[in-house]
Each structure stands twice: as structure tokens, then as C-alpha cells.
Image (cartoon, rainbow, N blue to C red):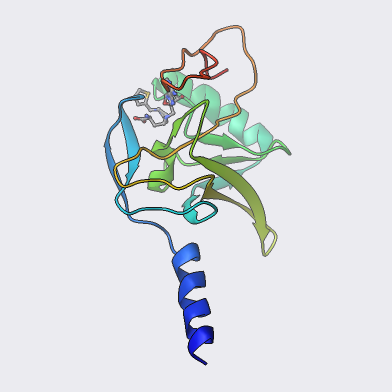
Length: 157
Ligand SMILES: Nc1ncnc2c1ncn2[C@@H]1O[C@H](CN(CC[C@H](N)C(=O)O)CC2CN(Cc3cccs3)C2)[C@@H](O)[C@H]1O
């Protein structure tokens, strides 16, 4: 019974959203920083937003560009669907890109709904900024990357 309780506790620890703080980032404007140590493969946070169809996301993207808020609160899924965190989103929308990220994203269908979960690739120490690879498609107009990692590709797209 004791080891069952420990297993339960360990599972909860791994699955629980981690303590994070939204603060100025060395990479870009604002970012998310770990307030507790995070182990490899631990669940960190869900990228919460509205799941929208490709056509709707094109219309919104143009609208956001015109409004000057930049379209990168849009998290594109492989099938063209987009999770839009611009209006209704969680703090995960503030996570910055790195070419050597400490987290990775996984799209999981929960009751037919696609959701984006962010996990740690490695141990993350208190105070480290949470990052994942945006995997933006290559574009002409480059967004210079400021991740500072040795293997930085120089741009996000
Ligand atoms: N490694 C990097 N190097 C350089 N720039 C980066 C990096 N990684 C994220 N970026 C920028 O961050 C946006 C992704 N953003 C993540 C959070 C951002 N730090 C924030 O404070 O809002 C969300 C978008 C929505 N936009 C609102 C704006 C706020 C200020 C100017 S536009 C930012 C991206 O589209 C980029 O422009």
C-alpha cells in the first residue's frame, strides 16, 4: 500500500502543472521562468487557446497583423488547425523559442479535442526560462533569433 501511495504521489508530481512565473525575458520581451526544479519528461504546462479551423486562422492572422499584435499567439497544428491564444489563452503563450530548447510540445487528442501539452526535455533548474522549438515554416522575411544558444540557427523561420 505504501509504494502505491508513493507511486500515486510521484505520478501526480510528474503530471502536475509546474510553478512558473511570467517575467522579462533575456530572449524577447516577456517569457516564462521555472519557480521549481522540473525533471526530464515532467509535464510543464498546457498551451491553452481556442482551436480554430485553417480558414478562420488565416482571417484572424490578417486581422492580428493589421492590429499590429503579431500572429504568434497562434500555435499551428500539423493538420492546419490552429490553437489561438490571442484572446483567450493561458500563460503558455508567453513561452519563447530556442534552438536548444529545454521543453518540447506534444499534440494529444482528448475526447476528440486536440490539445497541446508542453513537457521538459531535460532537468530545468529554478530560474531557467522555459523554451521550446517553434518549428516555424521557413520564410523569406526572417525573424532573427535571440535564443543565445551555441547551435542557434539565427532565425525563427
Ligand atoms: N528566440 C527568439 N528570438 C527572437 N524573438 C523571439 C524568440 N522567441 C520568441 N520571440 C518573439 O516572441 C514572439 C512569440 N511571443 C512569445 C512571447 C513574447 N516574448 C511576448 O513577450 O509576447 C508571442 C507573440 C505575440 N506577440 C505580442 C508581442 C509582444 C511584443 C511585440 S509583439 C509576441 C515571436 O513571434 C517572436 O516575435
